[in-house]
Image (cartoon, rainbow, N blue to C red; front, side):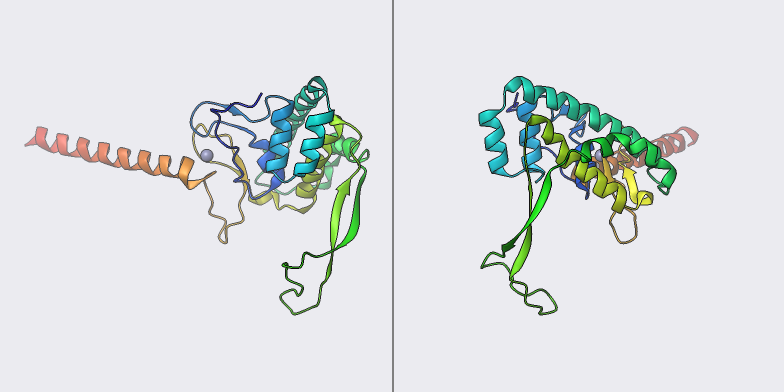
Amino acid sequence: MADTLRPEPLFIADAPALDFLNSVAAPWGTEIEWLAGGLDLLDWLERAGFISAEVLADFREKASPEALDEVADQARELREWFRRFIAAHAGGRLEPSALPDLDKINRLLVRDEAYRQIEAREIHAAHEDQDGTHLPLQWWRGRRWRGPEDLLLPIADAMGEFICGADFERVKSCEGPTCTMWFQDVSKNHTRRWCAMAVCGNRAKAAAHRAKKRSADVVRLKRAESD
Ligand SMILES: [Zn+2]
């Protein structure tokens, strides 16, 4: 069920597969689940750009709520499995020995009926790339949707993209003491520490400020006592 009081989902990870992990998080202390049911899952997938608005509308109209809820259960289970994989490998190098652990994703991907088509670029889009090459046509990616369980496929696709393309040494979890969010550090000097400055970064700054003030107060107090 969509919860009107719930904040918008956060997309702060710089990697769609990690944004999926962050579809449950506690950025303001209390845990927020953005995939509580089937309609939630559709909504999150569309916001994340995993499915189009048309696909969302189609599933809303034709799929049974029970079937969608069941897929949301599976999506949460897949998410927590992926969280364990990421936690086990983050900060180090991914080695070929990790492959047997990825059976779960490969078993999903083998079912995928994704395809590509060539289409014209939109008129207002640049017909030339930065080098001035003339590019009037482009790829369009589609998928034959057979049922709600296929909603797991774009998620598995994003996980595969991430596993095959990301530098795991740059995969980090937020340093906020109670924060569970993951991100890929794409900053130039690899110094990113927070899910978002506005969430945990400012909180940490405020805590550091309070600690500094406290220790200054203690020093003042001790001086007063010794005077
Ligand atoms: Zn955080």
